[in-house]
Amino acid sequence: MIRRLKWGFLAAAAILVLVLVATKIPKQPQLKLPEGGKFDDYATQLKWGRYVNTKYQVVFPYPLTWSMNTKTGIFESGDLITVEFIGPTQKDQTEFYDGARFVVMIPGETDLDLSDWIAEKHQALPGENPPEVSDTQLNGRNFKKVYTCGLGCFTYYYAMIDGQVYGIMTSASGPQKGELEAALEQMLTKLELGLN
Image (cartoon, rainbow, N blue to C red; front, side, top):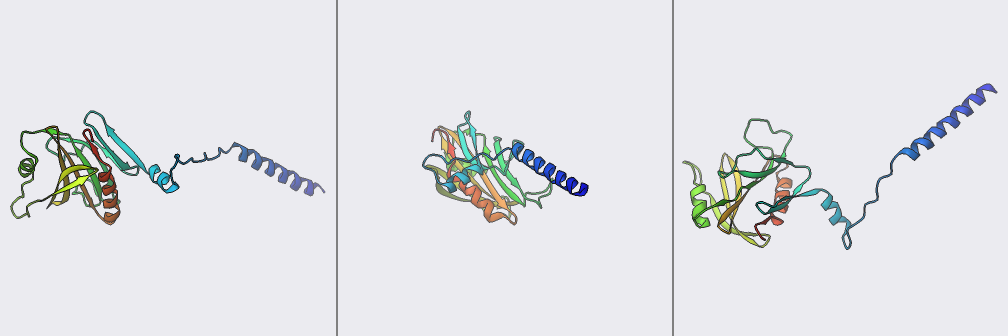
């Protein structure tokens, strides 16, 4: 009889503890879709942030799983910001072989036209193929696209806006290259420079 009372008391105490714990656990907030939005659009929005620099009038989306880096030195005039994904096999103090980068140049003034400016900045080293230059549009703006391979392959996008050259460099490599290139493409298609 005493044994039954002990087990009954323990069972009642356990149920009481479970009820108390359940009432203290915060409930997950219900996600609300933006008006007129679809769930897929909203889920995509949750995975992306937005970089905004009002001084240089640069806006672009970036994956929230990527990191910001202000210490890269890709462009001669300086890098405004680098958004990058570092892959798991990438080693410190080596060439970049596992990950992706989206680097924004600090805009610089020039008296040259854009083609001459690019020819001056992108000269092939001995034994390298000359850079491939083509015209492209990103988010309604005309750009010169420069593809160059030397110690790695890189794609640059340049636009002349009010006498200043704006530049973006992208690169992706490693086992996730296809996925990373798709992310870079999304960033480029929503890129806003100057007074877009």
